[in-house]
Length: 130
Image (cartoon, rainbow, N blue to C red):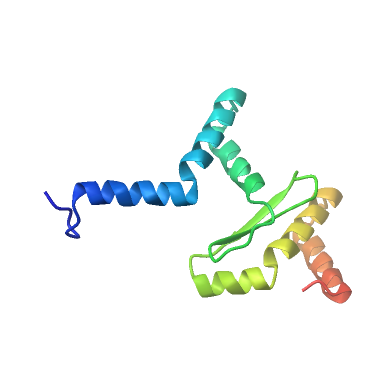
């Protein structure tokens, strides 16, 4: 019986297998699962998010941009569903600017975070980080 789009089940399976192979999704997910099961984190969902951020640190695409500190102890992902908007955010390196602000907040641990962020953003702007 054909699928709603008219394709045959075998064609659908072959198409899915080609997609998995082309994008190495089976390897990515398998590696993540093996590491998760070997470490058995208390909160596997957040552990998997961190795992994917670590694997994609420094990457920027039409879907998402990920920045991390050199030590990979802090990450910022900027993802927008609109490709045009995501491209703009990536080109302007918003993820890197947000990471720097987050790093400064984590280091200073100010009582008034918003005031601190305003001052830090102003300082970054004066120093030339866009």
